[in-house]
Image 1 (cartoon, rainbow over the protein chains, first blue to last red):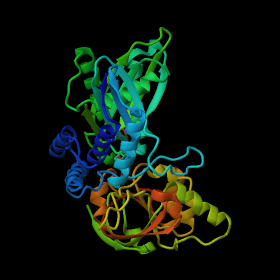
Image 2 (image 1 turned 90 degrees about the vertical axis):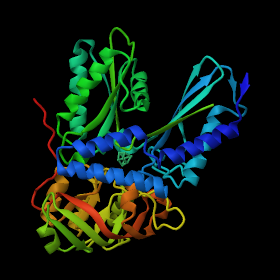
Image 3 (image 1 turned 135 degrees about the vertical axis):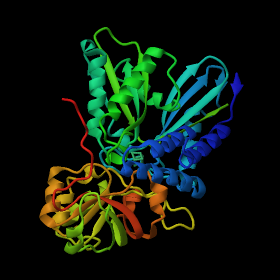
Image 4 (image 1 turned 120 degrees about the vertical axis):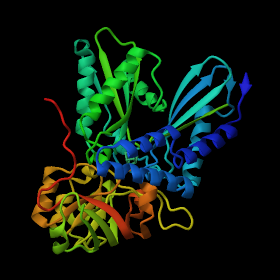
Length: 278
Length: 181
Ligand code: SF4
């Protein structure tokens, strides 16, 4: 067994929360630069200009990129030979609470009905996968409410197939319009079941915007969906233009012979995530 | 694109010259308020009690800022999705609210209320929280402190950059999605 100290995990998680909220990932910045150069509308170009300026300012002043620092989502790959005295859940939660406090990040978690803020952004939403070996990898995502609200899960009929999937995704983006702070990134979960489809959809958002899916068929599907949603012309912040969506990331999972689960997770342009390995 | 520099409180004359697509640099006092604060404002109105600020000519910014770090008046402060305040906005417009500031679509009822009461809906750039924070020169909580980020703040803004999304004449800036069917 390899022992990893809870305090080391907490410190790394705290750091990750603070830096992800102030340092726009390089791949996202490159897309903003591309959009600024190529967007067909002046209003859309101006949005990209502001977003680039915002990213510079955030890195410099350490004010968060967006005031909605999100619920804190963690994807953990925990080696079966790793032992964390005190527990991994607590180590991550403690780190998240410290990071949100020390980084002056907004706490956005509340009771669902009484709407009282929990005050420290707890609970962290932690997904743990056990993997062989003695390594630990923690990915953090700050997921804002505006884009999450535009996400959907549906249970299609297998007969609807790819055409049904495409129709649902395009319709979703059209209905969401300016609300989720476009240009967005779409995480699409196809298959699995009612709880698995949204899980793989959101996790797909951890991929780099400019990576290419290793399965050429899926890569082609991603390209087809991206083109279809960008034809909607919603544009940056809904002001019109060719950049409604920056990237589409698809994850597939086997499903029941009776089902075709589909999840669309809408991620705003403020795609904040980071990872750390032990 | 016409650009106007306006001062709060806004007047009917200010609103009448604005059209969807105009750029406005807003100066003066605006009030923050989002979901929970709006609910509380409605409770005050229902009980016949005074509101924490004068609605006449007022501008409400749908924002829940991040905490102010030392040496700054406020943290990141970009807009939240306005649609969630659609249930409350018409009543506030009828009582004198001249502008709301946010991002995303408004309901037909809100658009009608803006026509009936000479008011506008401004868009600020969502996700540009650090950039917009620069234009807020002072901020203090004036009500519902217990709501944390959702408390009502009186904010002083300088050349706060806005776009007129919905004007008082039915005009709208947002692009209509191009669907085949
Ligand atoms: S949708 Fe994203 S960018 Fe827009 S306000 Fe929410 S977290 Fe910020």
